[in-house]
Length: 317
Ligand code: TXA
Ligand code: MG
Image (cartoon, rainbow, N blue to C red; front, top):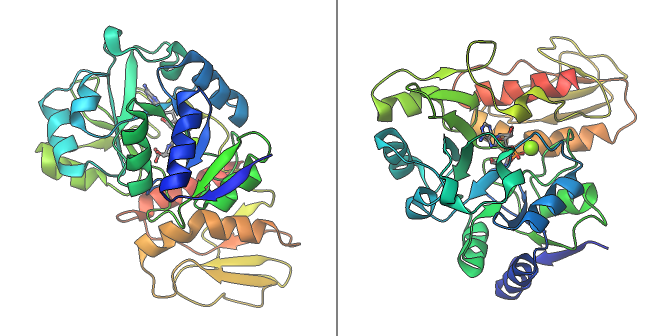
């Protein structure tokens, strides 16, 4: 049984008690919902991998309250400090050299010698971190390979019977997972695009930041190589037509033809709004009896790059 509870003080205390006992809970963050457990507990981390059906070679992000807590887990240099000071708490994950004395469960980092850390901004995630007072492992709270959850309800559906408690904290504001930037070499390399763009990172760092995508000579996040966001229906991207048997996922305009069903990610063509709606709308369209989901062209700029990244992966799945 999975219980969906309101993320008030009582709900947060119940979640904290479960985590202290090496259990797992669904928790809202500003990006997507996470499946949270004690990152220092082998038992809790094993329970996370098990509930998600996640391959063991795919490491987890350690969530912390602030830079001070991150410094205990990874080696923070001047670049990491500048980025954390500018973007934390928020949708940015830093990959750092792991401190051997960090005390994290071995499976957390999949033996990589590096650790991914993020300080989330969502008040419920922060309250839970403060109550538990240890780093939280929190992958997106979905079965491995499926769409990420942006409401507590999605978690309860995706992990029904696999997680005892889910905190309902409403719609995730950003709607896409955090930007992951690798700082373990002399460069800064984006392993997963998100709300914080290469340009925004470069402005703080004072040097160019590149994406690892399509560059075999650059590092990757193990998770980015896996099947992802797989909807039941096939997706047709950059669609400029729509047929009466298809569902239409639009961006700032009507479908170019008759369709079986339609949703618009952002009627006014605002990319941040489209990002916030993306996973929830794909879920809705996926439940319909249609031949395919036709997706309108999404501009590449700003968070558009991250939206397109998720769509391309979903289409591949
Ligand atoms: O926004 C987010 O980051 C959400 C919320 C819940 O915080 N979490 C999230 O976790 O998206 P997950 O597990 O779904 O994705 C984490 C990604 C995976 O692709 C994983 O391979 C990568 O981060 N990762 C974790 N540790 C890494 C490391 N040490 N080096 C490279 N990539 C790493
Ligand atoms: Mg995920």
